[in-house]
Image (cartoon, rainbow, N blue to C red; front, side, top):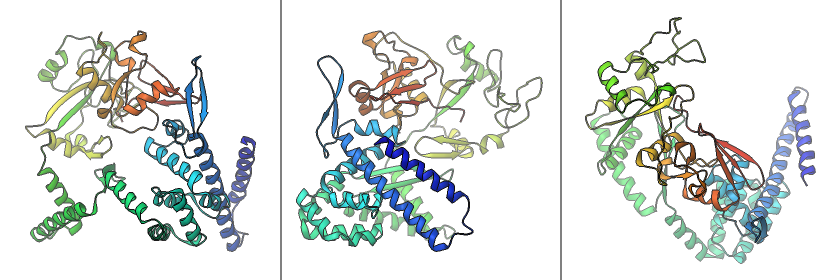
Length: 468
């Protein structure tokens, strides 16, 4: 089977090489035909992949009496707890996306044979097939068959939005209970997500809320926005709605702010008396001193400029950034986006802002280590590991480190120390993956994690480089 994929890939490479030669002598109708032909190949390949994903997910790996791992096949439709964790890194997908792909593939293979066959023939793309599977997620096998009989072949020529409406309409006639069950499930799965915007300084929000509550929320936002619009005609109504949303949320919550200063130091000077750095900063301010690299604008050892792009003089004196340079920098909040340096400066001026300090290795940007003798890391170590890792260290998992637990890479019961070099942030699910799914994890003293899946594939994850 792998040979067939190699042959197909070779053919596609040849087709790409032909396409690279140009199109001057090829009629437009033939170019359109090749676009369609490529899409049909993609559709058929997606069907093969979906079926193989479903077959893989149908197997559980269990330990036998000798401790060796073996496959137990439950058939398509069954979804192994750890299938998405094995396939996600392989397909460069995060945990959520990989889970959806596995669930959709299992449903297509077990409940929607007509839809899968249309994909394999090249007539239906994976996006529209996913829509059909999602809309029928709560339908019985008999209802799925009845819906497929009524929507094909019409859906083959329809855009995704029309496919959604057709499937919902037909399912409502065939199995109204399934429609109600899906609506109830969606209400349970309500969410609010925040994503970093492509534009620095902005964040995109996505929410799915019950319709009644959503209508009330929108009415409140819209009412306040129209009041703002009348008070300040320079703002658009859209801007007023965004400001109204912020005012309504922050007016009903108390939020404290902590600004963490990342200070690069030479690792040879870590073992200093307690409070030495704080005393020096209070007396001398953020400047260089014997044994410590400059706090701001320290020379970059890999280039002939400092971190602000200024030429580094031969004598290597301290180059302090101007206030304009500091305010021009952007600062990233993971999962939210980049906020401007001028905004950070204004936050620092507030009397209620807490300021924390961590030390970085001046070469790698990784936090410097400490350790304790007990099983549980103390609060300082917990904060350290969370700031070093940023998120769960399993490949593709973006769960924030503050919602994870520091886990011993080498188990404490087997002599693994409670030290930064032996602790990694893992969410609850991927903690179980590490212990119960045949994965192994090793970590270097610098915090680089090497994961090996049950099939011998390796994936690396790295601590946050705070210089970036």
